[in-house]
Image 1: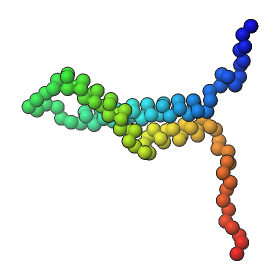
Image 2: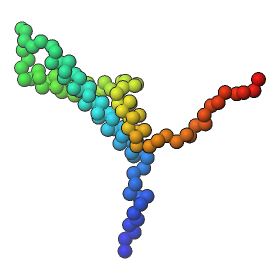
Image 3: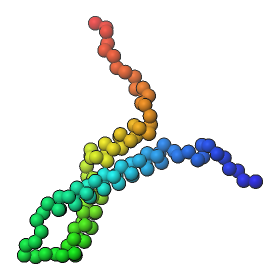
Image 4: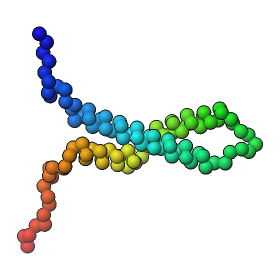
Length: 108
C-alpha cells in the first residue's frame, strides 16, 4: 500500500511560485528588449562599401539575443520588475493590511 496524500504536498510553495514568476517576467523582459534591438537595427540603412551578407545578419541576431539577456540584469527598475510587481499582486489577491496605518499624533 502506498502513501499518497492529496493536498498540501501537491500545492506549490510560495517560494517556488515567486521564483517561477520572477523567471517568467525576466524572460518577457528579455523578449521585449530583443524585439527593441531588432527594430532599432532595421532603422540602420543597408549597403555601403562592405556588405556582410547572411553572416552579418546571423551575427547581429546572436548579438541581439545575448544583449537582450544581459542588459535587463543591469537595470534596477526595468519592465521585468514592473511586470513582476503587477503579476505578484494579482496572484496574491487583494492586499491585506499587514502594516498598521500611521495616524497623526493628536497630543499637543
